[in-house]
Length: 389
Image (cartoon, rainbow, N blue to C red; front, side, top):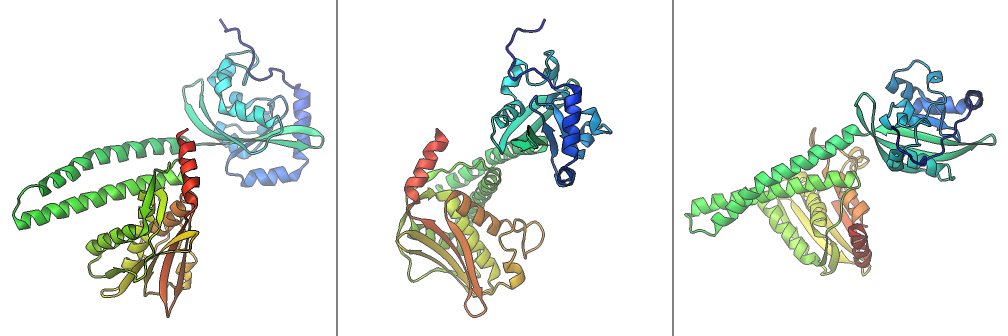
């Protein structure tokens, strides 16, 4: 027995003749055919009753039908065989389950005149297949008629990847933390010098591995827009530079890494771990670009409104490399590299409200800079509070 429920969306449908007239009207505009051919997503145009009056080839391929005529007049949930589309006589959009459907919400919102609406939609077909979709809807007026442009893409692989990443980082951290803790405990014991040296090396290596794992986890979150800042007040610029120099000397002992003669002291409110990772990648790139005995100089200066960190090395970056240096996966060091400069720009500019750039010349060498607004303190604090809320 069907439950008594007021339809979420209007149940009325256009006649078959009206649907066909709309379809023919849209096909007279050749731009739709050209546009739909180069669109990588499934694309539909819906009438005011949320019925399909135009669709692209991507939809035909996904549902394995030979012609768009077979989908004319249907609603999106019916085309995808959604289990709830058949629980009410009026079809897709009219059951109580449709109240929580991202696709239905986006379409109804677009029908109020809004554009560029994006939502996610979970759908189970009558055969039991589960879809996770990202959908877009936008109001569109054409030749005196109102339509909704509706597109979608399957994000099941993206969601599975996110789950696997979370599980992976969680499990690896669970295995690594006892090693870090045990090495730190061993350091408190009285051990022979050679054993103590090995324990210190194990501790440093395990800490560095933990840092790398955290860095990759944050990078993936940042790319997906899921990264939440963990703000710290009163971060000392000079202390941060000194810490970087000490760590770099341990790792790249054959390269002379030093602090500049002038280093201004200023205090920051920012995500310390992310800022440290940005600066560490700057130092790492400079050290790896330098030969034995060459000097890498780390500096911090204040302009009054901005705090600027810089890392200089004596080498020149060729033009072909300069043009691609901030692209993801671009590297001069071989396959599987190229995240460092890309992540520097992503973290600093999209999350820390800063700016990353570089200067290079054959006479002066190369200097990478990251500037952070000192007035970011209050803005960052407000952002953090809003994220928690």
